[in-house]
Length: 294
Image 1 (spheres, rainbow, N blue to C red):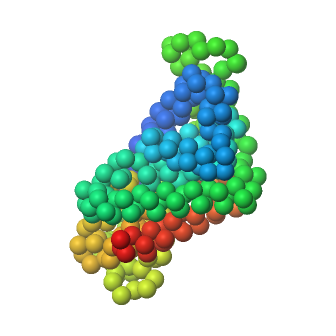
Image 2: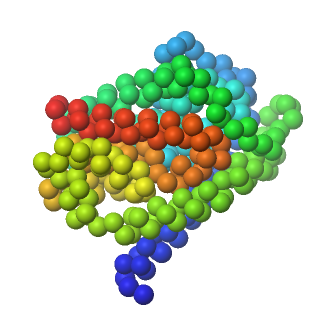
Image 3: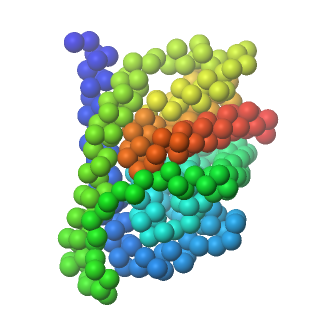
């Protein structure tokens, strides 16, 4: 077996273990948070006017810097308590794209001007997309996933007594996502291990007017953590890829991935999954076109 395939299988195993552990930990903490805060209080906090709900979703996403896959337990929790759909949509898009780690890495690699441009463009695009989702009534395409109740409405019983039901809810969140996660990570890791940087530069290099949308499309199946894809993007830029396609690749890879899409299919119906992919592509292409102009 070649070193290339060994690296692919190693990548698959590492990503799978990381995502399973991260998902369960995040789901457990979300269950405890919901139990401590209360469903009604969380629902009231997320509520707001036309703009306030998605802005709150973006703020919550920025304060909870998860990768695209580990946003799902929080998203499922929001849906469960009846939070505004536009706020939940904004959180889903903002958490992997606007967390402080990403903004800091963009600043270090590309300068504060591009960091501000990236943050502003992504912020505005997420608000517009979430409002559009609400206007189109896409909430009706959310599946009603059965989740084991983590409490019976009684007051907070303390961390020790609340931990077991919170863990049960975390497992309940995870069960319908096991097979989609396995399929998505398998394909994503294979593409990550099989696609060379030279290919990315060749299809998204300077002089290709389709470079930005092509890079955005490539970024979605190319599952890599955003903190890793940014240095890779810098390497691609040094190898000859234009700055616009680099950012389109980063946004596409961070905003969506095959593992996430597979897992989303367990809670979103196909039309909403398609709307999510299209939205990420639009944000990625828009950012890839505008950011180099700054």
